Image 1 (cartoon, rainbow, N blue to C red):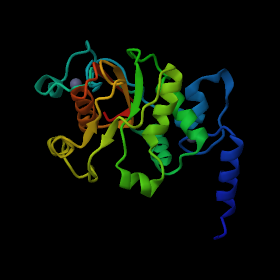
Image 2: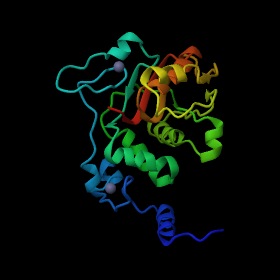
Image 3: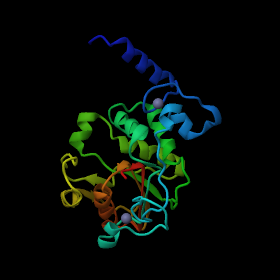
Image 4: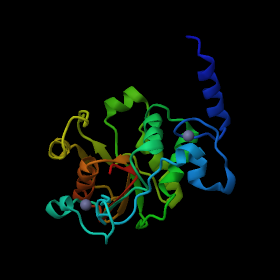
Length: 245
Ligand SMILES: [Zn+2]
Ligand SMILES: [Zn+2]
């Protein structure tokens, strides 16, 4: 066993003791008011948060610049997704991006609680689900990392909604490559058929809340929702922490 640097020992201890700290930078946070945003971020990091708002696409949650009414975006008009709605409390960037990136490599229970609470930090328009499912990781990635961060968030969401968590019905069928270098059309093509769902009695006619950490082009959640609807889900709604602007 190698020696741990003192900072790492302190971090590990603090994780065990659940000392409330900023999910983005580890600063201590004030828990005044018990607000989930104040519990998850220090006062400096809170300044960098951008809540999502109107005008936005009521289907995929894409936020538009300027003022005006919500309206269906060009992507959804041209190619309507299998999910009914997609909601995220924040735009992807600043402290929320930092927190999500850290969470990918450090699944401390306090982090998943703090970030899970953030899913419900704004008054999102969520249909009450029958079951909550995470966007699955491919088994090889799961082996490598040891956990699926979306499943940790989904577990929190299921408890909050008081409905079952289902991590088995929706599966990743093949390894998908890094999406970073791909444009929107390439991502959509690449992810088509990347998921499969079993037609279980639980899924039949069910309203599914599909949870992911961040939604960017919607290619991933489109493919996952498609698999769920084809397997019998009545409705799929997507909930994530952050939406790429
Ligand atoms: Zn901070
Ligand atoms: Zn849209």
